[in-house]
Length: 92
Image (spheres, one colour):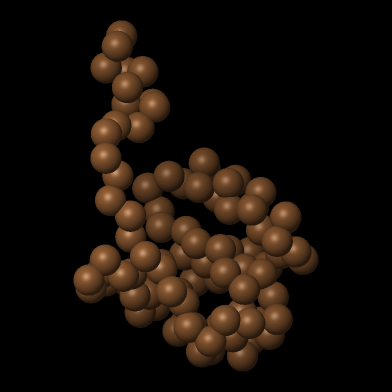
């Protein structure tokens, strides 16, 4: 699905979505094809659901969004340094 179809299918909802096809341009992430993974009743639930999905499938690209937004505005952040899990492994 594309975002406009997702918005029509799930009006005024919080969703966990997966980027099935995506690209990056000027540090902005464009989701060309989206899969809806879960519908959540509120923002608190969507945060915990996102954490569950991300922990279960860390290699996949999940986002949470509200369908009230006309467009998805996803910005990529450049991470400086190393993650805590990587740092812990390096010390062992």
